[in-house]
Amino acid sequence: MIVITAASGALGRLVLDRLRAAGAEVTAAVRDPARAPEGVPARHGDYDDPRSLRAAFEGADRLLLISSPELDTARRIEQHLAAVTAAKETGVGAIVFTSFLGADTAATGLTEAYHVTERAIIDSGLPYTLLRHPYYSDAFVPRVTPDGEIVSGTGGRGLNTAFRADLAAAAANVLTGGDDHLGRAYDFTGPLWTYPEVAAALGATYRELPTDADQGPMGWIAARIRAGVLERQTPDLEQVLGRPAETMIDHLGA
Image 1 (spheres, rainbow, N blue to C red):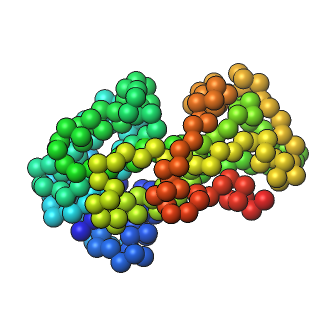
Image 2: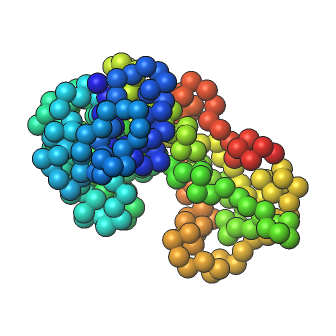
């Protein structure tokens, strides 16, 4: 049996759909049973309730630990560690964790909770697979303005984002792939793309925004893109999928 945590979220639902299509025995672990996906057995599994996690993980041959959406790093770490402890206490066969690119080398800022969780999983002694995700392409899809423009503050640099559907398919392949993936850490990156090349493919005009146009979270990410931080490429996602990952241009039908 495969147990999926955070199964009512967008990624969890996609993984469940893939596993059901493959005929796998799967159970959804959800904070709110009223929001459980239809068509699969569901158990109450709340990251803030260790007792519920132990009950939710009972009998699991494979556990997909989807990272908590909690924004507070300290609380997210506490939630993840509770899940790892529950997995060990219930004798889960293997744990698959959706981590983040760079979590193996850095333990600050965005990667801190993922780094701590990876170490806890390795130290638990449980068989494991680490799936280090890039940013989701779904959050970066370019939009053509009424004036026929695509705008960004990315300086024309590349983005290695991947679509959530491909990451879900990769997770499902790992969960159903026997022992071949155990003890592995995959650094997933999507096909590199830029806003100017997407604009050209769509027949739109590209306009670069001033670097101080957005001071919020997206402005911070844009600065990292301009610095080339998101241009790293690995073959891992394509290899686990067994096919090329979807490109941004293909997604837009250009």
